Length: 457
Image (tube, rainbow, N blue to C red; front, side, top):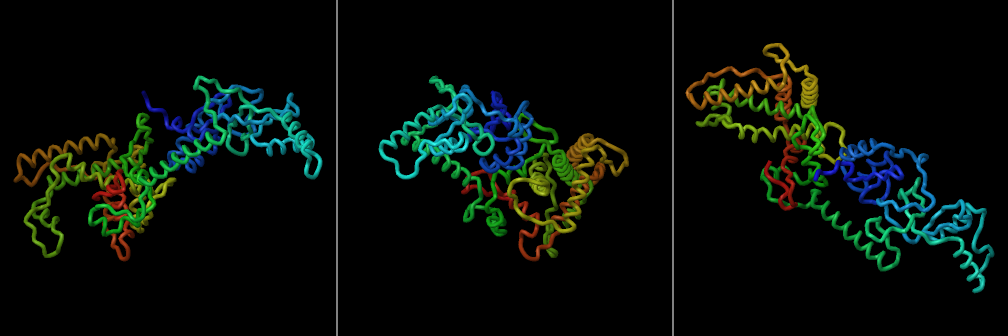
């Protein structure tokens, strides 16, 4: 069975009244208030709420404004998506044209005074006698009739109750809300238990102050906990997921062509780097590159990751960090970690975004040949060169020369410049003045229990 679309997970179309009803709250929501309802009542991210709102507003015939809504009259069948109340009081003062329904005696009295020319069950001042009380009570009993009722909206426009027929006894109709003491308190208990379960579930996904996990020593030293307190794990995990260039209806994943172009550029940059080590860099340069201290002598040169799986594994953290920056630099509706680019980092990032947009539009040029090439062809040719270089290195380890790899494309060069700007950041006060440290802390978050939530970055 196929999974329902994202809007149908939260809302259901009520065709007889042309409204959208929230499945969980059991009342209708105006189309222009869907985003606010989902974010406030169901703690849905802005991005998801916006997607749901756009889909719901595309439903045909949906009432958009209160002036278009017609409150049902004449006791229609109950709406399946809404709860039914058994304590409705239908006004009988003018039963031919008045369909007002209330659920309290105070509300029905107010209606009588306002809409029926000041009519009241008891007009005399002072404390009435027993005989007068009985007369007033009899008068009131004739003034309304108990009915089953529903309402479409929970407040303001469209929130008035209306009479409906009694639900069928086969169990397929709408739910009847209990109004007597024991049943009502039982329902309150169920709602409280559900609310507490939601709170516990939310606590499992929110990073709490005081958590202590077995983490990477470097992460512990950088004090990741104060930096990420109050952040939602699902949001942090979503911001570093691999993007897609085309929308995937099966996974309900929206297309992010710019992010996908940056992700692919980082992959190509890493493969280009490995091919350069294999093909062009001699052993003495690699001995110098692996040295971490000025007076250190190393006897093992810098080694490339020879197999493709290792290249992918070691490139992914950089790709995820770039996704963190890409998704937090643009407008978003979830609470994200705070960080700040330096002037050089900001300039490099803007160049990277510009090159990513150009690559999507087909304006990417091959700088070495000064001619237009499709991105897919460039990646395929680069992969062929890398694979050929790896085979040569494995078969002839003594050879220092191989096929000369292509030069970096514009977007790959922009990606390299931004990565260099991230690394070339001198920390003078706090660790989290560096955006790179901020992104690494997010990479440490794992989708597990609080005791196992943070792993190695």
